[in-house]
Amino acid sequence: MGDFVILTDSSTDMTKDLRERFGITDYLPGIVVLPDGKKEDSTLDWELMSPDEYYGSMTKDAIYTTGIKNIEVQEEFFEKYLKQGYDILNISLSSALSGTYSQCKVAAENMMKKYPDRKIIVVDSVRYSGGLGLLVSYAGEMKQAGKSMEEIADWLNENKYRVHQMGTVDDLNFLKRSGRVSNIAAFMGGLINIKPMAECDRKGMNTVMGKVTGYKKMFAASMEYMKRTIEPNPKRIFVSHTFRKAQWIQMQDLIKENFHPEEIIATRVNMANGTAIGPGMIVAFYLGNEISEGLVEETKIFNEVKAGL
Image (cartoon, rainbow, N blue to C red; front, side):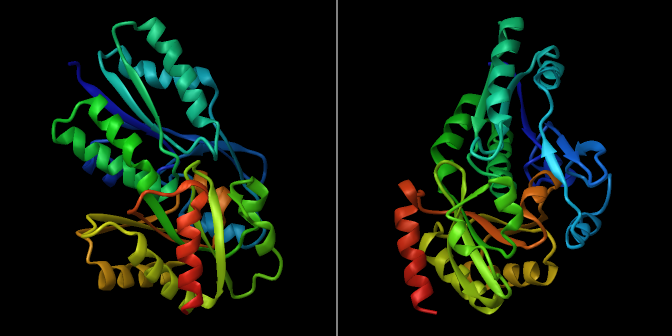
């Protein structure tokens, strides 16, 4: 069995320290188009500007867009490791949100023809941001524990539908513009103090479950929903935000109090996802019950939680 590397893309929220900790060899940045039209790499380490500058500018109506590198760049990214004798496990952003996964599949097929003795496995995470980061972190730990590439890929495909999210994105205009959320029509309009709450479905699309008024009810609903969907004795929970630091800290405190996970990994949403999300996100990502088809069970739970507030 040959050695292998774990690769991902710039849609995970894993900083350099996290990538080093979990043995993630590399990632391929996407493209962010700045308000002046200039194109830059959407990196994970905020070399271009700080998160506060990035999201702060969005509150002043700055508009950013994103894109993916062409397939030749993706092939070069894979080839860098293939020619060193490594196999590759690539964990990609949800195919429902981007063409990244499809392009990785094509690039992998092309590169395996060129390197017939090497193997590339591309996994569609059906998740993004901290949800993708959560899966990548477990993959890295499994590699460090001596699991094979195939064993890790199988685990990812078996468990990716167990990754939940709960929290709020309190300005849906960014998600509406990018087309990265479903069930949105009923929640647009006067959103002052309204907190839309979303889960991620089995296809990897954000779906608005409902809305509550104010952060107090948002936190109460989030904790109760998590109680009814989270795995026992959670090992790791990612808590991600864009431009809501106070609420981000409060979410972490509530999770510690209610669930006592072994660790909370607190992150800022990366540039690539932040462009489509905007400055109003605060969300916990965690492993729990398997997501049902059409979010039928999750919607029932959320409606019961909301009725009890």
